[in-house]
Amino acid sequence: MECIKNSHNAVIVLEIIEAIHQNAGYLSEIDGATGDGDHGINMNKGFMLAKERITADMSLSEAFKILGQTLVMDIGGSMGPIYGTFFSQFSKVTKGIENIIPETVLAALEASTEKLMELAGAKPGDKTLIDTIYPAKEAFKRALEGNKGYAEALQAMAAGAQAGKEHTKELVAKIGRAARLGERSKGFLDAGATSCCIILETMSGAMQRVIVNEQI
Image 1: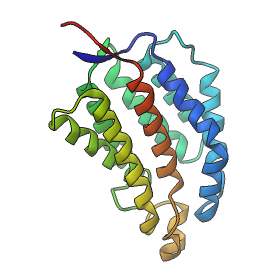
Image 2: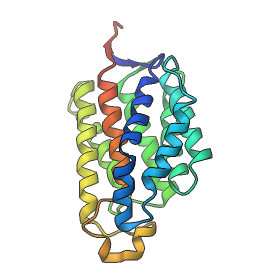
Image 3: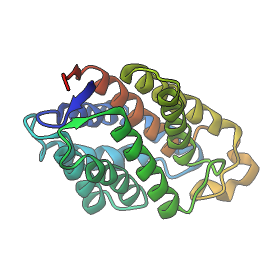
Image 4: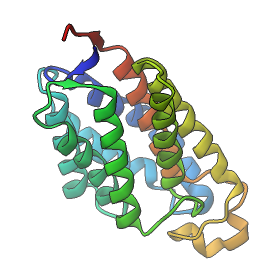
């Protein structure tokens, strides 16, 4: 049975934090085209605060919980509660599960997507991070239904996230500050969709590196 150990796997979350840190300038640059230009700054602030509170020996679910709580309490704006909810759902779904199998990840993706759509009042096509996480979740689900292995399903998730992010260039923003631009928001990536893609692609790579084969 292919699985990811929950214990001592906070490294996955630490890799996500580092990816946001490395891309902070890029995210603010994208946000500057249609928004306030502070998306990367705010994300980096919250993620780096969480880094100070997470140690490598923590479980994956504990690290997800700390990151989620930190983002809600310390980022502010709209992205704090949104990404706080995202990571909190991953923590809740994986809590108490030692062997995280692909179906566990799918359950976490489904719970996160549902809660985010509820919280943001967004659906696919509104030019938000939903346009990244929804196709990523669907790609992961299709891979499992096609009897793909854990790594292949995670690769499919990353590819779905990337395709979804790129598709936001073709969309007109209907929610958030970019919505005031109307048709002029076309041709630009959505900053939230881009940060969500970075998170999911990094999660995919980090998880693939720690997959183990456990004897049932």
